[in-house]
Image (tube, one colour):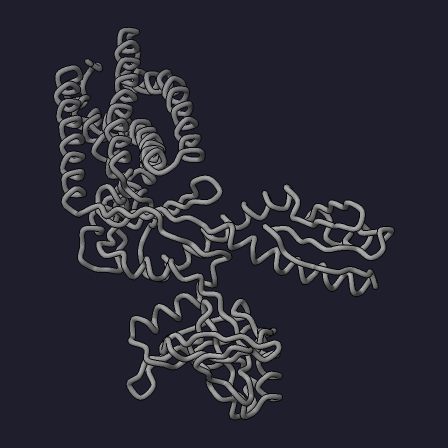
Length: 507
């Protein structure tokens, strides 16, 4: 009978069998079964370095601020002239130098900096506001990119900021990144504008009607739409977009949120018979005629779309628009051959380390060394099971972490065996020797593994790319080695004793 608590035995058996099931089920062809995600260096794929156009972002912001300044000056009945934009700054002249500008613009708080020299006034964004906006711009861009990449069905992309203007994107398994580049290259800013009632479509105009602008068609480059400057609805009020097939032709159905539904209903009710232009990234993609009020908040974008282009449009609308244009400044493709070579090298390293450890343990500890090897095999299975369950990505540095785990796992068993060897000289009973050996080794095991675990967590939290891959497998390896050494090795030793019934422990 094993001299071990039933809960420990039950827990160990459940964990072992479940881990084996998780790992080996990953080799099945069933797509619903979870498997380990391989990183870019093992699987191959695309590497893109993206840059955010901050100048375009702040150019748009300063235009909006200019209108706010104009409105506040008018509402406060403050006389001014020559309100213009110049190099990211708003300039104007005051008619009354006694005007209290700080009271007029107090609602803007720390967003702006005001400089006044007699009648001339210069308003710009404050340093605090610019810094906050750069961080916000970066975070928003990362999230939108993540949404767009996830929508393509790609697993485990690495999206990592580099400074405040650049983003690293690694997409494992993507051999042809052209579609992804098209998706990332679109800002996807969408808006709905009414067309000119008399001249909705023009070829060219020297003089534009007041409050109207020319926007080119996405399909015909020689035609322009004459649209109202004022956007009736913005794309950020869209709630969903899905591709549908109507009479064999792909189209995109969209739906607004509650606020957008209300506005869409009002616009379509008041403008029956007029055309409503749908503008995406400064091009008209559709301009349907409003035939009846649309109160349900849904609509259709039709055109000469293929299934792929309609899918991409729906994806962009669901993921949302980027706050600023993004350009691809570097592109690399990691081929599957390099990935295969890396996998083979990693397998060879793990196999070589495992065989050397096996030989050493058998020579030093004989049958007890064999028990340590069994525990070590289970330890590796635990690591792969955790990688699978948590959806973590295995990288080449991650394989290095597994190799290190093998060494640490054996080190834990060596500590236990040496403590048992020391206790066997005291003349105690076999079970007392084993229990005391494990208890004495436990403190040292916890000290060494917990400190290494803290270091691994710090690497994961502050590291990037390859360092994170190493930290993940090292963390899982430490947890697994502690479990396998403290639980499995003890169970194996007790099992051997209950079968062989030796008179004393000989290590």
